Length: 468
Image (tube, rainbow, N blue to C red; front, side, top):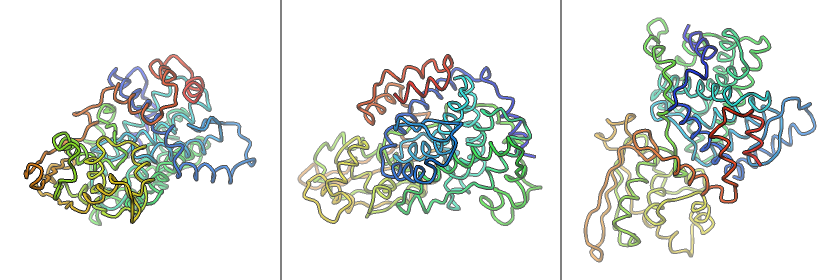
């Protein structure tokens, strides 16, 4: 039974097994998560989620287990805190992820781990144990199901994310093997999230994350109290793999998990990526390439006659030339490239300002906005067979720019195989701190030093210090 082996790994894993590299990466991921979530708490989707939870639950619960809502300096029930922090962690499109597993992990793992660790006053070491097993199991399961799962239209962060949250919660609640197996079974039957929500320009993409956290946590609490779940929910004849991954010819008796199970315990936390731009990760290679070209073209972008973006198929599908809201904009490759050529390195504040100036409207009086729209209209997006062969191990994008006669009358092109932030093309810790400061200019950055020695503190103190 596949999940039974996973359950044993979860219950047996100890902090002392972690490498220095894994612990360092997890601390960097925690810092990045907190900065993204702290800023994300002020987004419209986060505000709506908070007001809705307050409307439903306020005054109706005896809050014996309380956890903090990041960015709001208040506590609520443990499930609502996890849900709200999950929404805020993902809403900006700036949270970490894993290329092969095709999943955003930190936005599921940290809200779960923080809610339980703070409520039960666990130690920093226990917190790190839960976080590391969450990354391990999430990467393992994501790599097993993808790319087929994603190609069927499922958002892995919402689906596999439920298993991940159950993993973290089970570890921190100190469940035994059988209870963990039940928690994973219960989370699997709640796994949900459709990419139509992502690409349809709705707020539901961040809802997937909040619900994954909520579903995984409640699964662990139910299992703790004796509620049972299917131990074969993942590989069974009517389970996750059969229904949500493979075609009708899937046969559980013929499917081997031996190679996958050999990987469990070989923690690959270092392989996660960090994001710089508030756009879908599949767009980042095109942004990086556009920025390389902007270094040569400078502010002469009005001399661009046309742009061709050649990339892999999944990225080329992000070809929305007429985004109508912020959610659609974050999934629009042509607008992301055009914005990069005009503005340069783009931040959340840049996006908000451009929208305020009419980027999503039919008419604007701001020259930069009109230049962005003109560039997007002169762009073609092409799925390139050779580049597609490199995916998913690479995420390549080749951008070709034709200039008019008044400016060099030439052709500029460049290619990026892996966007900035992947393990092979990493960010420095100083760059993550710069990202934090850019998104949260009023935050006292000195509070973050508690993360450096998180093993030495209780998580109640850590959360209190960070959320001051």
